[in-house]
Amino acid sequence: MPSLPPVTKAFLLSCVGLFCLFELLPWLEPWFALWPLQTGLFLPWQLLTYAFLHGSFTHLLMNMLGLWMFGSELERVWGTKRYIQILIASTLTAAGVQLLVTYLMHSQAPTVGASGALFGLLLSFGMLFPNRIIVPLIPPIPMKAKYFVAIFGGIELLLGLETRSSVAHFAHLGGMLGAWLLIRHWRSARR
Image (cartoon, rainbow, N blue to C red; front, side, top):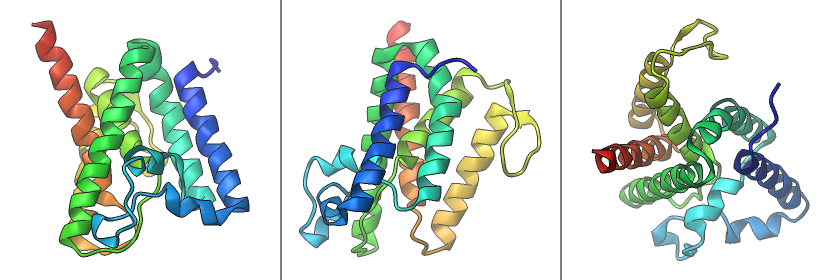
């Protein structure tokens, strides 16, 4: 198994380290989670810091697995600079969409997790390697990356419209939007 590229490794270790820190010092977490604007607890740095926090060990494990699976290869292909740009773009658009949704729904709950950034990486992977065969964990059926991304995006949209769960489905879609916009910008700049 190849070693992790530097940014992917740093992001992974930061998320794991902060998860452990906030398990020991939970009173610190509210300063870094993404709070809805109407709560009065929103602070500008939360637009990025929320991505380093996770609500449970399973949440952390699934996000870090996705980071390893998709992020490692993207960082090797794009290099450090572009990879950081896609992570930041996905994280910021996920936060922006989530803030809009929480405002419209009058939600008071904070958002945590790297899922928005991960969904941006997932979309990026599907755009760069559309015909690569991947085998997702659920369902374990081999499929082309472009179909997996489309199915996953569709499921997120349906779940976001249908349920009132604690999962930030629209933040995931926002992360995909950020990655799509940045990749489109890169491609148009090359022409």
